[in-house]
Length: 407
Image (cartoon, rainbow, N blue to C red; front, side):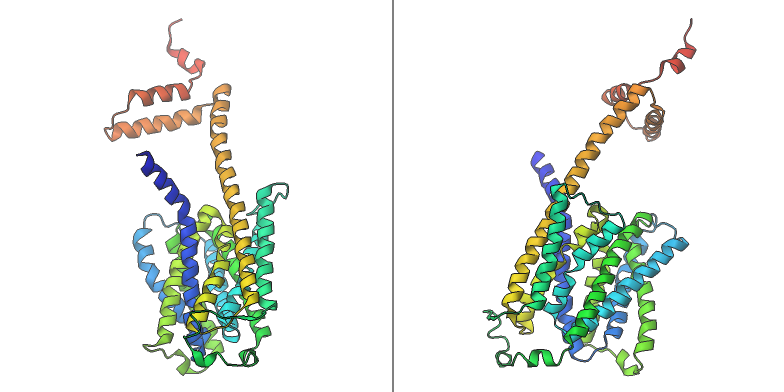
């Protein structure tokens, strides 16, 4: 029994980490597939529409069935937050990210996206969702880890260095190995792509912050994800009608374009929004965003294997810094979560002790009476041990009890 309990606790602790790492593999696959689709001429505006339409259709049935009894009412302010979430995620983030991906490469796009933890951390501090006390080691670890992560991403962007030959990439597309390096950048507007990616990352960080705040008032992750995707689809349709004037741009068949839209919608929109919402409820937005650097490493490996992308020494050195910064941030978040649980465990006995000393136990008495009534109504047996615990933990003031006694 003890072994099963220990395994259960270990599994509960590992779930947020496993969930976020799995999402990074999903995001990496999306980058590769959508890059191929965009290279074949698909409009990124149309891709965003189809992506979130697939996402809404895939997750809406689960939201309707599983959360029909717990779904909160949508007030005006919650609707406005959902509207902004749809604007930040499906419209601004995705359109600018796909535009940047089209002008650059999957590895470069992921490297620029590694500014996400730093942006999220700064915005969380400004919104008072994160507290920074530089006297504590855990806060120093989060700040230093964020700076190291950004430094690694910038190193990948600004310094290329010599090309590193990958064993698995030598035999994939041999005819691409002798392509001049100048040809690798002349057809791409790297500066424009970088600006688009920075805007997309800023919108993504804002999405993390606003989603974490919305879940506190609208505690129905599946329904919230479905609403974000549905509202985002309508907003993306409006944007596409303005930006794309060719009816042929909407055409989609049984090809890579359909795969890109379906994969991105189901995996990286519906599932990703839901999972990251659950993780943010438990660990906060900074923890959820701290895993994004792993996506760049996965994409660099997959890109060199599938797309025959060149891997440079600067990219490898930057990846090492990014992983080091990532673990520093995660260590700081782990220590913060551990201290928070220890503090909560200490506050409960102190609060009960204070109530006993002052004789202010009316709230506890009312709770115990309600529990006793529920147990009697359900014909449940109340053990003698439980009665003794209630009698000890809930002292009764003398004056009410002595009113019925004989003088």
